[in-house]
Length: 219
Image (cartoon, rainbow, N blue to C red; front, side):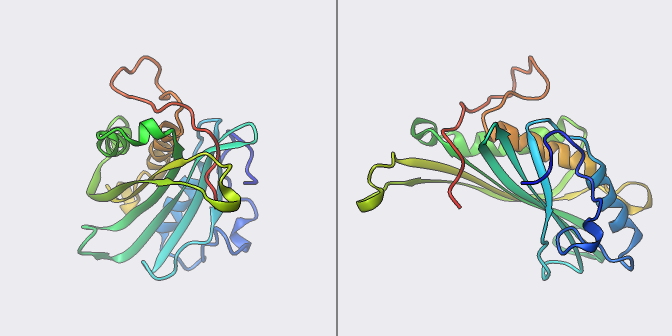
Protein backbone atom coordinates (compact mmCIF):
# COMPACT_ATOMS: atom_id res chain seq x y z
CA UNK A 1 0.00 0.00 0.00
CA UNK A 2 1.14 3.47 -0.79
CA UNK A 3 -0.12 5.44 2.18
CA UNK A 4 2.40 6.36 4.85
CA UNK A 5 1.85 4.71 8.21
CA UNK A 6 0.01 6.79 10.76
CA UNK A 7 -0.91 9.50 8.30
CA UNK A 8 -4.39 10.68 7.44
CA UNK A 9 -6.41 8.80 4.86
CA UNK A 10 -6.30 11.99 2.78
CA UNK A 11 -7.92 12.04 -0.63
CA UNK A 12 -5.55 14.50 -2.32
CA UNK A 13 -5.79 13.72 -6.01
CA UNK A 14 -8.15 10.80 -5.40
CA UNK A 15 -11.23 12.60 -6.71
CA UNK A 16 -9.81 12.29 -10.23
CA UNK A 17 -8.77 8.64 -9.91
CA UNK A 18 -10.76 5.46 -10.38
CA UNK A 19 -10.18 4.57 -6.74
CA UNK A 20 -11.86 6.87 -4.23
CA UNK A 21 -13.76 8.82 -6.85
CA UNK A 22 -16.86 10.63 -5.58
CA UNK A 23 -19.05 12.45 -8.07
CA UNK A 24 -19.84 16.08 -7.35
CA UNK A 25 -23.48 15.20 -7.91
CA UNK A 26 -23.45 12.69 -5.02
CA UNK A 27 -25.75 13.58 -2.10
CA UNK A 28 -24.25 15.92 0.48
CA UNK A 29 -24.59 13.42 3.38
CA UNK A 30 -22.60 10.83 1.44
CA UNK A 31 -19.91 13.34 0.46
CA UNK A 32 -19.64 14.48 4.08
CA UNK A 33 -19.36 10.88 5.28
CA UNK A 34 -16.58 10.20 2.78
CA UNK A 35 -14.76 13.40 3.77
CA UNK A 36 -14.82 12.20 7.38
CA UNK A 37 -13.26 8.89 6.36
CA UNK A 38 -10.50 10.72 4.50
CA UNK A 39 -9.79 12.96 7.49
CA UNK A 40 -9.61 10.20 10.10
CA UNK A 41 -6.37 9.79 12.06
CA UNK A 42 -5.51 6.18 12.76
CA UNK A 43 -3.01 4.04 14.62
CA UNK A 44 0.53 4.23 13.21
CA UNK A 45 0.57 0.52 12.38
CA UNK A 46 -2.25 1.01 9.85
CA UNK A 47 -1.62 1.64 6.16
CA UNK A 48 -4.78 2.63 4.32
CA UNK A 49 -5.73 3.54 0.76
CA UNK A 50 -8.91 4.07 -1.25
CA UNK A 51 -9.82 1.25 -3.59
CA UNK A 52 -12.44 0.57 -6.23
CA UNK A 53 -15.88 0.35 -4.64
CA UNK A 54 -18.54 -2.19 -5.63
CA UNK A 55 -21.03 -0.73 -8.09
CA UNK A 56 -24.17 -2.81 -7.58
CA UNK A 57 -24.74 -2.84 -3.84
CA UNK A 58 -26.07 0.71 -3.52
CA UNK A 59 -26.45 3.91 -5.58
CA UNK A 60 -23.35 5.35 -3.89
CA UNK A 61 -20.32 3.51 -2.49
CA UNK A 62 -16.82 4.30 -1.24
CA UNK A 63 -14.20 1.71 -0.28
CA UNK A 64 -10.95 1.59 1.66
CA UNK A 65 -8.39 -1.18 1.98
CA UNK A 66 -6.06 -1.36 4.95
CA UNK A 67 -3.25 -3.48 6.35
CA UNK A 68 -1.57 -3.77 9.73
CA UNK A 69 2.13 -3.50 8.93
CA UNK A 70 5.19 -4.44 10.94
CA UNK A 71 8.25 -3.48 8.91
CA UNK A 72 7.84 -5.27 5.59
CA UNK A 73 5.33 -7.74 6.98
CA UNK A 74 1.53 -7.49 6.69
CA UNK A 75 0.00 -8.98 9.84
CA UNK A 76 -3.63 -8.56 8.76
CA UNK A 77 -5.55 -6.88 5.99
CA UNK A 78 -9.10 -5.92 5.16
CA UNK A 79 -11.57 -3.76 3.30
CA UNK A 80 -14.24 -1.37 4.54
CA UNK A 81 -17.04 -0.24 2.21
CA UNK A 82 -19.44 2.62 2.89
CA UNK A 83 -22.79 2.26 1.10
CA UNK A 84 -25.46 4.94 0.75
CA UNK A 85 -29.01 4.78 -0.58
CA UNK A 86 -30.79 8.14 -0.12
CA UNK A 87 -34.16 6.38 -0.43
CA UNK A 88 -33.35 4.10 2.48
CA UNK A 89 -33.16 0.32 2.57
CA UNK A 90 -35.54 -1.96 4.46
CA UNK A 91 -32.81 -4.45 5.39
CA UNK A 92 -30.51 -1.67 6.61
CA UNK A 93 -33.14 0.31 8.53
CA UNK A 94 -31.30 3.43 7.40
CA UNK A 95 -29.67 5.12 4.43
CA UNK A 96 -26.06 4.10 5.17
CA UNK A 97 -24.43 0.71 5.59
CA UNK A 98 -20.86 -0.35 6.42
CA UNK A 99 -19.58 -3.64 5.01
CA UNK A 100 -16.24 -5.16 5.98
CA UNK A 101 -13.84 -8.01 5.38
CA UNK A 102 -10.89 -8.68 7.72
CA UNK A 103 -8.30 -11.46 7.25
CA UNK A 104 -5.25 -12.69 9.14
CA UNK A 105 -3.09 -15.79 9.47
CA UNK A 106 -3.15 -17.65 12.77
CA UNK A 107 -1.01 -20.09 14.62
CA UNK A 108 -2.63 -23.56 14.28
CA UNK A 109 -3.25 -23.91 18.02
CA UNK A 110 -5.17 -20.63 18.07
CA UNK A 111 -7.24 -21.67 15.07
CA UNK A 112 -8.28 -24.79 17.02
CA UNK A 113 -9.73 -22.77 19.90
CA UNK A 114 -13.49 -23.48 19.90
CA UNK A 115 -14.23 -19.99 21.26
CA UNK A 116 -12.30 -18.18 18.54
CA UNK A 117 -15.32 -17.18 16.38
CA UNK A 118 -17.18 -15.70 19.36
CA UNK A 119 -14.07 -13.84 20.52
CA UNK A 120 -13.47 -12.35 17.06
CA UNK A 121 -17.07 -11.18 16.78
CA UNK A 122 -16.87 -9.63 20.24
CA UNK A 123 -13.84 -7.62 19.11
CA UNK A 124 -15.97 -5.90 16.47
CA UNK A 125 -18.94 -5.20 18.72
CA UNK A 126 -16.65 -4.20 21.59
CA UNK A 127 -14.64 -1.78 19.42
CA UNK A 128 -17.87 -0.06 18.38
CA UNK A 129 -19.41 0.00 21.85
CA UNK A 130 -16.25 1.37 23.47
CA UNK A 131 -16.59 4.43 21.22
CA UNK A 132 -20.30 4.89 21.89
CA UNK A 133 -21.23 3.83 18.36
CA UNK A 134 -24.48 2.23 17.31
CA UNK A 135 -24.35 -0.84 15.06
CA UNK A 136 -27.89 -1.39 13.89
CA UNK A 137 -28.97 -4.56 12.09
CA UNK A 138 -25.50 -6.05 12.53
CA UNK A 139 -24.76 -9.38 10.86
CA UNK A 140 -21.71 -11.33 9.83
CA UNK A 141 -19.67 -14.50 9.73
CA UNK A 142 -16.37 -15.63 11.23
CA UNK A 143 -14.60 -18.30 9.20
CA UNK A 144 -11.44 -20.20 10.01
CA UNK A 145 -9.68 -22.40 7.51
CA UNK A 146 -6.54 -24.52 7.37
CA UNK A 147 -4.18 -25.12 4.45
CA UNK A 148 -1.79 -28.04 3.97
CA UNK A 149 0.75 -27.98 1.14
CA UNK A 150 1.85 -30.82 -1.12
CA UNK A 151 4.13 -31.52 -4.08
CA UNK A 152 6.22 -28.52 -5.02
CA UNK A 153 4.78 -26.61 -2.05
CA UNK A 154 5.37 -29.35 0.53
CA UNK A 155 8.14 -27.39 2.26
CA UNK A 156 5.63 -24.80 3.44
CA UNK A 157 4.32 -25.34 6.97
CA UNK A 158 0.56 -25.76 7.48
CA UNK A 159 -1.26 -22.43 7.67
CA UNK A 160 -4.49 -21.36 9.36
CA UNK A 161 -6.51 -18.26 8.51
CA UNK A 162 -9.31 -16.29 10.12
CA UNK A 163 -11.75 -14.24 8.08
CA UNK A 164 -14.40 -11.88 9.45
CA UNK A 165 -17.19 -10.59 7.22
CA UNK A 166 -19.66 -8.17 8.74
CA UNK A 167 -22.04 -5.35 8.01
CA UNK A 168 -23.94 -2.89 10.15
CA UNK A 169 -25.99 0.31 9.94
CA UNK A 170 -24.33 3.35 11.54
CA UNK A 171 -26.52 5.79 13.42
CA UNK A 172 -27.07 8.97 11.43
CA UNK A 173 -26.22 12.25 13.09
CA UNK A 174 -26.93 15.90 12.18
CA UNK A 175 -27.77 16.31 8.52
CA UNK A 176 -28.22 12.56 8.18
CA UNK A 177 -24.44 11.97 8.31
CA UNK A 178 -23.03 9.08 10.41
CA UNK A 179 -19.79 9.44 12.35
CA UNK A 180 -17.79 7.48 9.80
CA UNK A 181 -14.40 8.59 11.12
CA UNK A 182 -15.09 6.95 14.48
CA UNK A 183 -16.50 3.84 12.81
CA UNK A 184 -13.28 3.63 10.78
CA UNK A 185 -11.19 3.94 13.95
CA UNK A 186 -13.20 1.13 15.55
CA UNK A 187 -12.78 -1.05 12.47
CA UNK A 188 -9.02 -0.43 12.47
CA UNK A 189 -8.93 -1.47 16.12
CA UNK A 190 -10.55 -4.76 15.11
CA UNK A 191 -7.92 -5.13 12.39
CA UNK A 192 -5.13 -4.56 14.92
CA UNK A 193 -6.58 -7.05 17.40
CA UNK A 194 -6.87 -9.74 14.73
CA UNK A 195 -3.25 -8.97 13.83
CA UNK A 196 -2.20 -9.70 17.41
CA UNK A 197 -1.47 -6.13 18.52
CA UNK A 198 -2.46 -4.93 21.98
CA UNK A 199 -5.56 -2.74 22.25
CA UNK A 200 -5.18 1.01 21.85
CA UNK A 201 -6.21 1.60 25.45
CA UNK A 202 -3.54 -0.05 27.67
CA UNK A 203 -4.66 -1.94 30.72
CA UNK A 204 -8.02 -3.02 29.32
CA UNK A 205 -8.21 -6.54 30.71
CA UNK A 206 -11.54 -7.22 28.97
CA UNK A 207 -9.82 -7.36 25.58
CA UNK A 208 -7.91 -10.49 24.60
CA UNK A 209 -5.35 -10.30 21.80
CA UNK A 210 -4.12 -13.08 19.55
CA UNK A 211 -0.38 -13.81 19.44
CA UNK A 212 1.72 -12.39 16.62
CA UNK A 213 1.10 -13.87 13.18
CA UNK A 214 3.74 -15.70 11.18
CA UNK A 215 3.38 -13.60 8.05
CA UNK A 216 1.11 -11.97 5.49
CA UNK A 217 -1.75 -13.74 3.81
CA UNK A 218 -1.24 -15.15 0.35
CA UNK A 219 -3.24 -13.35 -2.37
